[in-house]
Amino acid sequence: MKLTVQELYNLIDGLSSLLDKEIPTSVAFSVQRNFKRISEEVKASDEVRKKIVEKYKEKDNKDGTIQLKKDKLKNYQKESDELMQQEVDIDLRVINLADLGESIKPRTLGLLEPIIEEVIE
Image 1 (tube, one colour):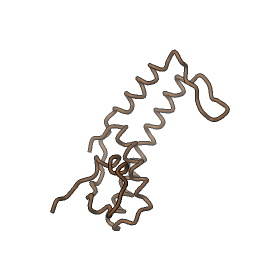
Image 2: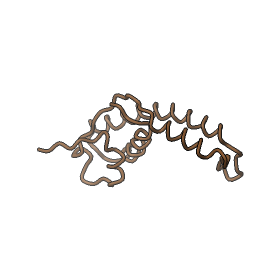
Image 3: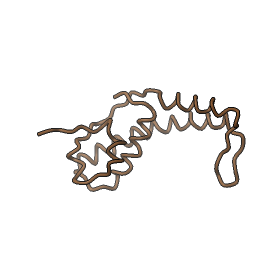
């Protein structure tokens, strides 16, 4: 399955919200498997993100935030956007919507959309 780095970040957020939800064992296995595979890809992209931040960082603030060079914000944004649009080919399991239970937050469904399928019976 080809996904952008941005979609991977969205999926990791959506899958995180399912990790403690009571779902059928086979679906829980798919969720955990997908989470692990996506985590590996996200870790790699986080390293690139850190390098981009370091490149355009002016200073670290005392409160833990980072201040970017004001004259380089467009360059920073361009490189960040370019990273988020990179495509990754990753082997993920599709999850049937009905297997996620009776209630799930709309935000979670939106984040999981690339790996959700709705089986109409």
